[in-house]
Image 1 (cartoon, helix red, strand yellow):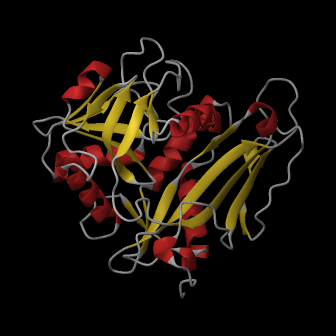
Image 2 (image 1 turned 90 degrees about the vertical axis):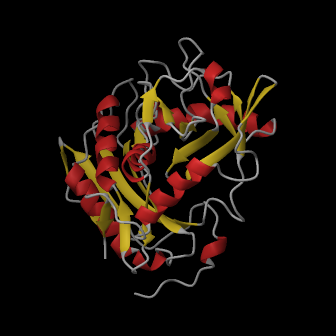
Length: 341
């Protein structure tokens, strides 16, 4: 199938309607078979559980065109497993993991003309999500749910090259130790909106959230995990039960160990040791790794030796290796790449 005529290299990271999406409904204790549809609207009660008590979860992954022309997606089984964990935490029915992967494949295949060509820097973003759909007025889980998957083509995250970020140590809390920080719930992102708008208004790109219990340990940003590099090229990632288990971070840890031969530590990271790291990055689906050039802790600047002009040496190796795997340039570990067509 021929690609649609889009200016792929100039796409932004925003929503563009594609022809097909998948919809399945949960009622009377089971999921229906579901189907692809061209209808992009959602009709629910004004008293739906999602509208009253924010009972909604989501995932994010991408489809790519590889160097040899195949359309693939990256580790969708981990997205299915993470959505299962999110559903259980919010008392929602688990959408079967095998059907999750199957329908991701079906939706991408049905919208294959919107998968950007190899070398464009663009990708097809895939958004599976689920929400409580029946009326709920008392505080309790919904009885009925809808699971949907839509896609939208998105442009390269870094237009015109990589620009290291300036972030601030945030006074707001992202998640409590026994809260919902470890799942991908819509309510977590709603809570971060004021903090990110405030950061942008003050000239910062992102927030660094600390643990809410002691406010001494690094957790994550509103939508990405941290990854640090020591002066002797060791990879360090923060460990906490209130951090979202990023699929990108887990993949980068494997790449660091198995492809680059680097030592990796997943441990508690204290704010007062951040100044001793040589490189810092934010990792997630959108950009893979966004380099951080400077962290500002209430007026005190922590500047990384990699600087504000380019990605650090080790961070760049991690980025190039993982994106090389995703694009079919470097051989992938078994099971990482799901070929769609």
